[in-house]
Image (cartoon, rainbow, N blue to C red):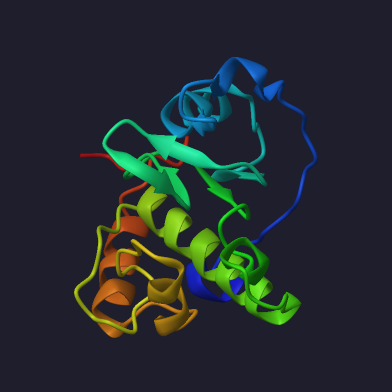
Length: 164
């Protein structure tokens, strides 16, 4: 992450009561509401913040999501829940899980820096509908997205939001 965005990365543990985000009908957690909650949390020394979870996330128009972020905003979320091989009835592989999660984290942080989905099949900013899509991507930005990132990084306000 530090390598992709050229800024320091720090981890901070926090706790959110997830019960209010649980949808009994879907048996999943509302990603949009959770993202808004993370966005409302103070991160005074952070340019960007990403909430990391291990729950099944959804948004109203999709069956599930791996993560979500405010485009050009300050925050995003990502979940491990659907990234493990065991979720799909396959033998567990921690390295595959870590690789998938890293890609998802970089992808969502890319959105916070103003990057949209990319058409380059190996770019980490390519949209992922299925876990196999994540496996096909590299863990880095393509040259086009890297160039866009450099432009966007010069347009951030003091709160880490893009100045449109």
